[in-house]
Length: 112
Length: 115
Image 1 (tube, rainbow over the protein chains, first blue to last red):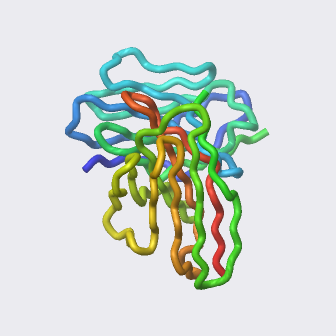
Image 2: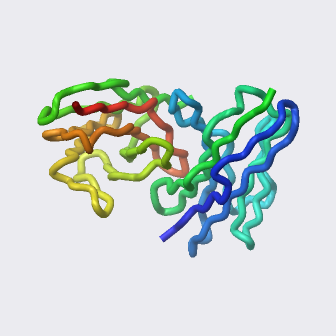
């Protein structure tokens, strides 16, 4: 079975600084997708960024980018120029031939 | 973009009541829908997967007679919590996916409180 591990239960970052959230996963599949979701206090699940495993180029969405290391099964999220609105729970997720499997999440605090 | 509507957003009811939660894909056909449960400060745990017109597939440990799932059309799935008890209190989130490699889109969730 696929597993997703987020080893940082909590992180904090100063406003306007950069922070990296870690994620590793385990799978025997060769074709899959990886995601980062943001869950603010409203508890909506907001898709931040998506990476196809067959693409070597790291995905980027404005201030959000990933460092995808397929061989190491690592998928970290970098948030640049952090804003107060970035404060939330962040979940790393995997999807292959299965529904989304989520990590336990990292709670990000942004300090003004 | 793809929109998933989940209703109601909040339910408070007495123990023994059955509660129905609806999940609708508003602008796409959802061939597959998923139901997740989230306890406070925890991650989302998949309860079941449903494909339109067929029986839902439940994850290990999820009681299918307790959590009834119906996926009668390509735009609607319902989760009914039968004879709910306080331990069923939780946050329930649905998700829908179209065909191919489309990502899962989430509803806004339902906070269920059983007194």
